[in-house]
Length: 239
Length: 87
Image 1 (cartoon, each protein chain N blue to C red):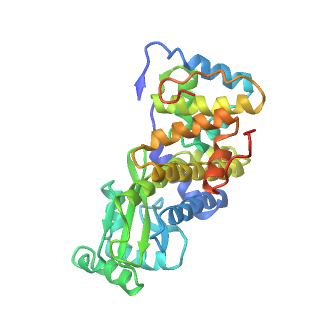
Image 2: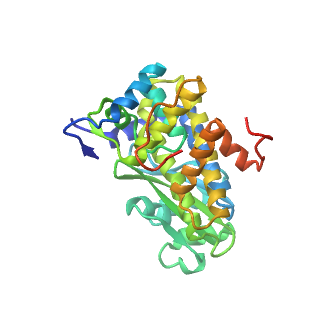
Image 3: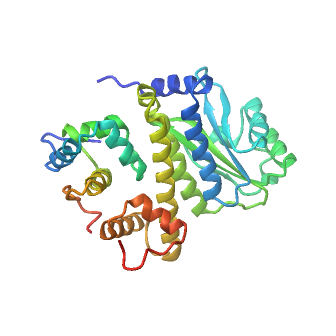
């Protein structure tokens, strides 16, 4: 069966960029959640290729993100561009050392008081379609753990985009999808909390623990995860 | 993705649960996505039909999603897990 997922995703994207609010909202949520999940980030943006192959900052949590990003789009060189062109995570620990690699971007970033950045590729069907970019005011703002967390969320953005076509076929699912995205984020956060409590366990172990506890107590995973995030102990005697 | 010569035996159990719940493939996909599934709807469809073989993690996420729906309706959690999750 011929497969044209990239063109599908691009068509979906171009529609999203001009018209659709629900996909935009969902992506905005992903970016906002990423900012919360990685506390060092002052703000974040999502760069996406549009249907003409130009890059724009489609979604952002602060006006400064598109302002800084435009410097790299003008110059054709920057961490967000490298992240999706090379399909890898690009981390700049000290912006003052990036002035030779990305002259305009580094200058624009420092003008906005940004001294480190983390860029995660958004990959759909093996094609880099864009990148989530996190900005920190400190040098060395991001750790390897932050990379892992943010990568999970960039994957979520990829899944949203990969399925974008399907969403338009079912408008009534938009709200459901947004709920699903929230649920996913809460579960992700709860896994992170469990892993922080017991550093030896993996993300999969944390998930298994959640599943076991949710079945034992007969509550939905999302509800249990929310309880952990809210640090609410389970009601006396279970339910 | 691994293409199966014969359908995965546990695909039948996923599909049986979906059909018992009266959910569409896209509703199953949403539930699976909501708990962290990363595959596309068309892959999920293919796994449910048994045309292709789901990786263990994705199979178990689908099983969790379907079992949650079953439990929410007071039915038995009927879909077995492959290996990762053993309540």
